[in-house]
Length: 446
Image 1 (cartoon, rainbow, N blue to C red):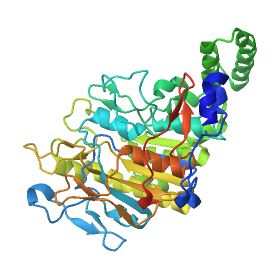
Image 2: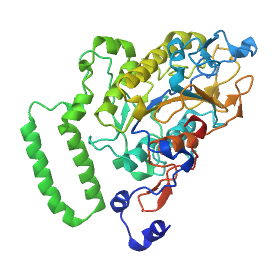
Image 3: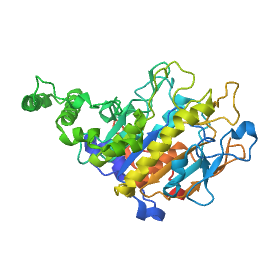
Image 4: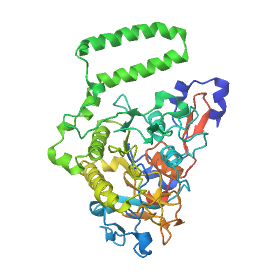
């Protein structure tokens, strides 16, 4: 309280505040797991996966609700998931399945904002980025638990979250904290032959020695410029130094060298854009990235399609069976098994989630429409109780009947396990203290 109350009187700056340890109240009931995780891989299944065809099948519901797919047994007695995820069924002992997430929000934009920031959208236009937006989770992690070995802490790939027609959505940048805290967005296709990140490729006319000389010249200029003590110049300097650090970091460049992986490993993840992006997230975590954010990529024609990504408004069954679930089943299972074999799962959180679920009944186009009243997600890794199912939806999979949670509770769980703390405070740009999340950890899955 003294620290918070003294902010105004002492006129502490944002950098000064960021050098202070976050204020938090540790949960003594789970103290041994506080800070268990070092890293986070966030798999965002944009569009809203159907809970029925993934982690919450309803075999006893009427046919028009349960659909044509059957549940299958997993390697945990009594736990079933949809038959479209046979590989995932073999690793459920490493997963916590949550079947009771609810926002009551059927919108991609505001629902996704809530999931990705842990805060409900309260702005005037959910299809437009505002300087008043809450920072994304990756920005909070970048601020309160930065990487100790790389020039960037939070990475987003292979593309940002966009809505039709090519609208960059709020909830995936630094928000009111400013661009300094944006995650690094690498727009790329790791499935391409000879894949590389252009940002890491030195131009022929700018060899490494010349690039270093330019950096030294910039440093000399900055020494003079700092005498002006303008916030804009200082912010520009920070961003420039971070960008230069990325260019000169051999470790950063090496993290994107997918050709170092064996053909067997790359096949194991799936050779598509999503599978290779998931493999890339593992390499980034190994290199020292704190949070790797993997968006489900759009396919050619998605910006004009009626059912892009996981948004299955039409032809739900063939799309889930032939396109979506096979990719997820392959890449997600490979990631969990690979992390486990490398000893990384014990220190890495993995979350797979969308912004909503789908309606119980099919529409006239054979699709399931938006449904935010209940949906499922899964977690694995550091501090997560494997083989556990949290919450329950009703007989038709339409509403939670026990263990209801909201996105801020997921955020609180992640911050707790990362050792940041779910009551951590951070300053906004004016130096006012804010609590990172208003949620509480989901103790059943810890």
